[in-house]
Image (cartoon, rainbow, N blue to C red):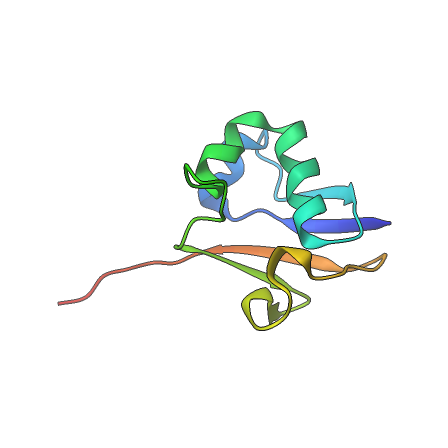
Length: 92
């Protein structure tokens, strides 16, 4: 099933400057595995040492936060879009 993963500008240097990557996957986790198999340097920026998605990385499937679904086990369908959104901290 073709899924589009939207790559934020901060991570595009690890995807040869591509802002979208198409993968075949039936879950968000499979989509991430496929993405990281194509772009190995990206893996350390998405996953922590325990193999979990880093806490400052938010992942959305069709604009829905996967933390409120089945996380990486969230099912995908052909034509779905996954957004990777790094958290930005700051302030006074």
